[in-house]
Every structure is written in structure tokens, then in C-alpha cells.
Length: 323
Image (cartoon, rainbow, N blue to C red; front, side, top):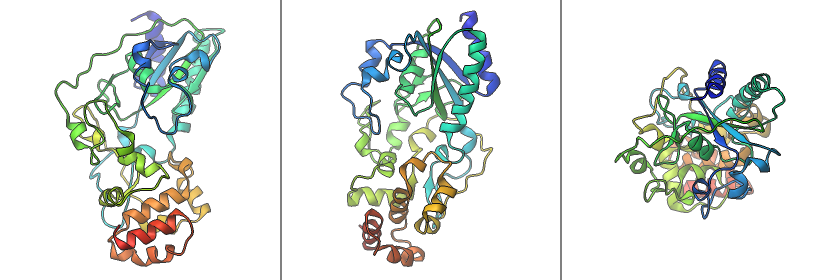
């Protein structure tokens, strides 16, 4: 470990980050190929652009990858009771994009004083860079078979961020995987989205269904109803032996009835500061309608929504019919 990296890591830890590592600005082809020929939803940039910091910051020489733990958001039973929906704690308020982004900007200002004259580009899952590959290359953690970065001593319940810079920072070394023959994460996937390690088929992912506006099949709806899915799915992470859940924050599952009756102002007030806000009110209402299927106490609310135009009305009708 160079003295510079040691200093930068100490500065990051003082702000609450649990890991920091450095990678070259342009990732080697072996990393680039991990993105080629793979469908990545909601990402506009090409693999070469996502793995080349010179596209985001002129003259970039290195990218620092950092991890921020959020295991305190997970506690107790992870299955919501009747009348409630599963809203992944990772996406709950406050929105990690702004929460971690603010810390990253503070970190960048500290780095500017450490490396006078340097320039920095900051992103937290809201820019062109591929956080997971940079974190893997930087040695922040190894990539689990479910594709999540597993940080030693912290697991995969971490948010990743990137700081591209034109400063000269020696890259670290990728970590060897510690997954061994374990396949708990692959077997835990309720929709069978993994045919083998790191082979995620996005179109089969339950979390993707819950964030995508495409038409859902009856089988997909039934599985979402079974898990009461409103947003996200953590099953492949929670079964991992490296996962840490500290239980510092009690989980409050949202009421399906509240979501089914959401107004636009109510949506902004309740979900405006969550990581699900960008998907909009109608998507959460659609998912709540699916999750409400077969629950007699919610039937009247579904009936009220049946006359509504658009996907909310369509899925309310389907939910009442049991798909």
C-alpha cells in the first residue's frame, strides 16, 4: 500500500466510507468484456464509455472507488405481513444518491487539498461509470456470484461511488473471490434469474420487473404477489454468509392501501426522497395492485382503481381476477 493510498483511505474512513481503492482511468479489456454483449437496463452509455474515465473527465488518470455501508437498514423479519408491501431498505429514505453523493463531494474537497491542483468527477450510481467494475479492479471487494461487490468485513450491503481524477494515483490489485463452491445466492433467486455464477438474466430478475414499465406475464405477477414486491429484492444478498445486518433501524413496511390511494403530492412527500422516486407514482401503484391480489381487505380499493386509465387500472383488473 502506497503512502498516498493509505492517506486517502484514512480520509475516506473519517467520513464514514468503509473501503477505498484506486483503479486506472481506463479499465483493461478483461473488465471491458464483462459488459459486452450484456443487457444493462436503464444505462445509455456503451461499455467502452462506462469503463473509460477519460470520457467523463478530460485527462483522467485514475478512478477511486469507495463503498458506504447500509447494513443498519436491515433488521428482523424480511417478509412483510398481510396488507404490507416489500420496499427494499436499500431504496428507503434518505435517497442514497444524494446521501452518499454529498459525502463524496466532501471527500473530493479533502482530496483537492491533499493533491493541490487536481480535478475530480463524482458519481453515485447516476453517471456513466460502471461502479462495480471499478470497485472490483480497485480491490474494494470481490464480485460475488450474484454480481454484487462483497467488501471484506462488510459484505455486499454497500453503496458504491466513483471519483475520477487527473491526479496520479497508483492502482490497487483486485481481490481473489472468497465464494468458493457456495451457491446460496444463486439458489435463493425466486425467479431463477441465474443459470450459473455471474450469469444474471435481467429479464428474469424480480427487482427488474418491479422497476420496469413493460408488460408483465401472469406468472411474473403471481411471483411478485407472492413476495408482495413494491420495489427491489434482496434475497440473493441476504442469504450470503458474508452479509452483515446490524439491525440499527427498524423496518417499516409500507401499507398497500396507502400506495393504492397515492396522490401525486402524497407520492412526492412519501417517496420523493427515496431511490424509487425516479420510477414514478404509477409504477409503485401498479406493483401495489399486484401485491394486493387475493387480499380480501384490499379488494374494494382494487375495484375503485379498475376504472382508472393506464397500467394502474389494467393491473387492478388483473389482480382482482387473480391473473
